[in-house]
Length: 535
Image (cartoon, rainbow, N blue to C red; front, side):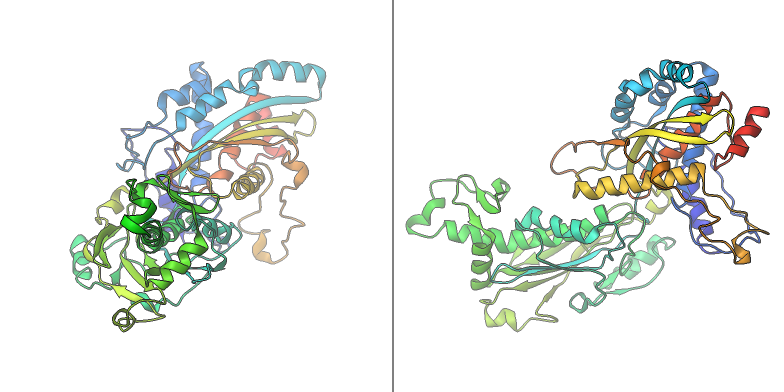
């Protein structure tokens, strides 16, 4: 059975793509087969349904005689609209911004003239231009990130994280997230950490199917969490993993570095340099690696770390979060300061100069476990509405189809991606380029029999299963635009799976533009193109 029910359900929720469908009836069935057992496929069901939707939208536009991007603009969701499950997606939806950019692109505006000109110059090939756009959810609907950050008196910063580096660059991005509040990246990163004794957590029940009464019963235990730890999957690192890293960093800043800065600025008669000004935490800024606020002397992280340790301020924080389409939250009291945080577990460590009374309260690894109060967990009803976190990507592709062999060659492509605040631009570009290559393989090349003659016979390898190479993916011609965030406080969004989807629909639409016929099965092989032409 593997992931069949989950993949099928995700495919159904994704079928709407970017479109507002106030009246819908989406049903899905996963059928048993005698095919070789396999894990979940790339795109996890969304690729299969959204690519089909995007090709149908173009076909509808053709039958209506209107521009395909104009049809998308008329039907794309706006911020605050409900998806097909009845949930309102998080934040601003920038779909129309992407569609406007695509509509203004020279290749799209002049696609018919480009086709005419190129076919006149190269009569052996048909030329086509295609476009597709989609938005995909990220996360599993039950995310539980954990992170721990500590700094020494010498200014050495260590990050421990539950996340596992599987090639997405998670360890690099999380090290940099620390700098948002600490001023410098983590100098040491440990990933895949499984021992978190300082939090003393327990879990139980199934977060996907538990009733509200069951959840309320579990919450009577202040150590219970809905899920112990997230796997590194479902494109969850940029947003969910960063949440834990950022919240741990925030605790360190608010209760360690910021009090240290105020004490340093307040040294001297009548409150020192801070006395003539009003210095507020919201005025704090890291500039060239130094902390300043409202005209105060810039202080290096090393200065602040040394002072925080000497005065016994907070120098370490371990956090646990839980997300089921929104974050669990609770009140915590840190040194008499009560705060409401989007966390369901928190432990802190104090500096070397902490009073003996505080040192005596240490539980594990030198940490003090704080009791949460007034905890609120996402209502179980949110499971019904499900998806709320989306990232959109659009792709415009040019290709040619040989009139004799019916082979397809991708000539170039341009993509637009909106992923909120970019943590590491090179990683985003790498994910985009790799995903597009995967999508091209899915659209044009990758195929094998499910039953007899297939890989179950044990004689299949990459000599028979075709994967795209550099020459197949227009590697030197591809371009992309990463939309700038709306503000510096925009969250970072997961993109790893979504980047492979729109190129599939765009290729299907470009082939139809080239040959004037629709190929309705993937991959779009030369045999299927010939069949469509003869049909």
